[in-house]
Amino acid sequence: PRKIIIDTDPGQDDAVAILLALASPELEVLGLSVVAGNVPLHHTERNARMICELAGRPDLPVHAGCDAPMARALITAEHVHGRTGLDGISLPAPSMPLAPGHAVDFLIETLRRKAPGTVTLVPIGPLTNIATAFQRAPDIVARVQEIVLMGGAYFEVGNITPAAEFNIHVDPEAARLVFASGVPLTVMPLDVTHKALTSRAWVEEMRALGPVGRAVASWTDFYERHDREKYGSEGAPLHDPCTIAWLLRPELFSGRHINVEIETRGEFTLGMTVADWWRVSGRKPNATFIRDLDAKGFFELLRRRIGSFDGA
Ligand code: BDR
Ligand code: CA
Image (cartoon, rainbow, N blue to C red):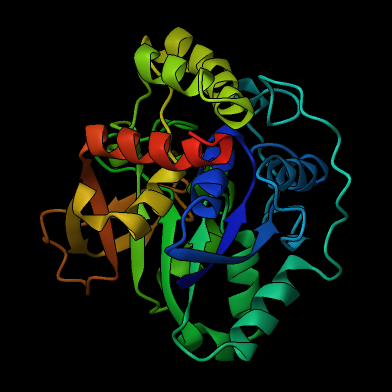
């Protein structure tokens, strides 16, 4: 199986991504590195442990990482994810401890220990942990097999500001460092994740599966409310699971290998992913920017894999 580390700020959609990965024999999750984002770190690291326990994986190392962006104050998204970041269903308090050691050290040590080119990073929150690891230990950069991340937007512009998507906007300096690192990048921007919208029928199918399916249904119900009120859209966008689904079934997605730069100084555009979709800049491509999704295949995959926790 392919070795991955999920860098996460759970987040209901982060939770679904983690469950999908843990349900998939093609992937070996080496651990979770947790970052502040949707809510502060004391919530995200606790949420990560609750998710592992829900998945029956209290053995999985969960490392707490950076509690604030590299050069700015933290911006959070309780208005989307609720006070705890995982509102929607109350899960038992986690009994598994955090793994010892900072998430940045876990990233550095794991990349140094494993053979070069065998570990894929899957960041689904602000890129603070990853960029800090790259800055502190430049030798690990060339050892990363690939980065598959959720972040950015181009045709769909922003969700936290008119121009920027949340994960990139929260820590644009970190994003810039990662996008300039030279590591092969696959990017799941809002352009594709807004096509991963849950339907009522799918949510009810999930709810009927058992305890894990019920949690997924309650989470998506919770943060769908935000989208419905705000955007008038039916269904909740499953942003973060797109990364894991791409690792499992890349044929469900399509995009372009293009240049993507991160705006770190714009007055109105801080954290914008300036994606050269039409290849007009002459700048070197650094990312595969995904735009389309076979939503039917995506939701079938999720139902089958998440269903496996509930014996379905
Ligand atoms: C991203 O921001 C968070 O709210 C979600 O978990 C996702 O990673 C979407 O913009
Ligand atoms: Ca996230």
